[in-house]
Length: 232
Image (cartoon, rainbow, N blue to C red; front, side, top):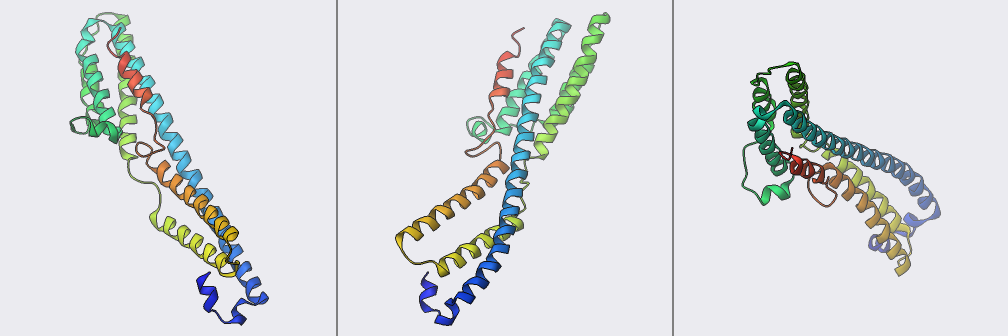
């Protein structure tokens, strides 16, 4: 709006306004498409990680149930599983990490210590062999899921793409303000529009970090699974 005050009158003619409107319409269309794709992409990634976490908690609870049915020989293995779940809570959620002493990353233990402990069991009958077979498969699935969550900790949002989209949005609002009358109604409307678009950018960044920030995945499934461990 301040730039408008110093522009020559011919730069603010109706022909100039029409040309800018046509140009900004194409930019606004591209920005809306890319912004929508970014929100949809990060939301899909967020939902996938939440589902993986819920499945992991369910498999942990079921593995403990299978080990309990195997017999008292699995006492140490079940204790190991409980320690692994406690470490996973500390490493996955930064808030929990701040309130606990940091431990080494547990991903390797899920694929080494836990499967080795189950393989070391010596079943004495057909029932125990069946439970051991189920436990081996569940441990393999848990190890894969834990590594998957570990590898997905990096950001999935392309920083250059985000910068380009923000630049497009800035250009759009500059062009709108250039021809808008400088009155309080217009200023308030533009500010509300800016806050709305900024909210979309904020949502993208929050969904991209699902275990930290305001919109984070709840640790309730893992905590519930931890509470059930060792109670059978």
